[in-house]
Amino acid sequence: MPESLMNAIQEVKAGNTSSFNEIIRAHQQGIYRLCYRLTGNIEDAKDLTQEVFIKALKGIGSFRGESDIRTWLYRIAINTGSTWRKKNLNQPLSFEVTGEVADNKTRDVLLQRKISEAVDSLPYKQRSVFVMHHYEGYKHDEIARITARSVGSVKANYFQAVQKLKGKLKDFAEYGNE
Image 1: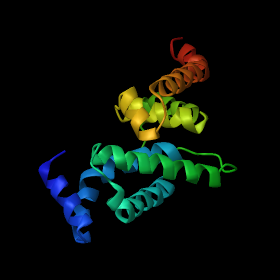
Image 2 (image 1 turned 90 degrees about the vertical axis):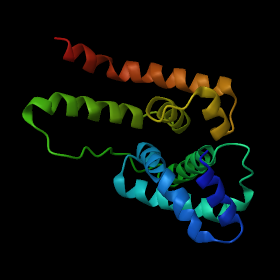
Image 3 (image 1 turned 90 degrees about the horizontal axis):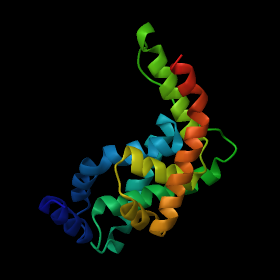
Image 4 (image 1 turned 180 degrees about the vertical axis):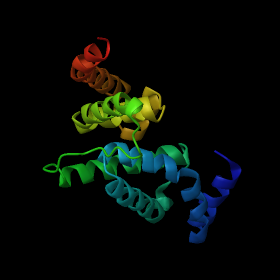
């Protein structure tokens, strides 16, 4: 962790909350990406990201520095996302595909949408593990620390997610090879 972030954490713990902006700047994009992949909606992801940083600011005193601040923030995001998902169980996720689509990119957009829908359909634990490993680049042991699960549980969730995604995307892959 950069020394400037360590200093910012200490300053926030000492009561200088304006130093928290440095922590936000360093981690906002990653937290937003994770929240978007967990919610599938830009507005909900923005709200969740804001909620994560509010919780982090309120709870900064509990950050012991045993792990990286990024790991601590991701754990808050996963827990906040889990709570959000429970409140919104009856609302299906709908991943938004943004940007202008040219005719020659239609297949890529369809594939992106199909993948998003398949990831969306995963149970929350599998989806969160898959997103953190595949999209955010976390290793299984890091995910285990973030989610407070065993490495075996994380590996099992990842394996199950991959198997389900393969099954859901099989028809699309066969269609694309014709």
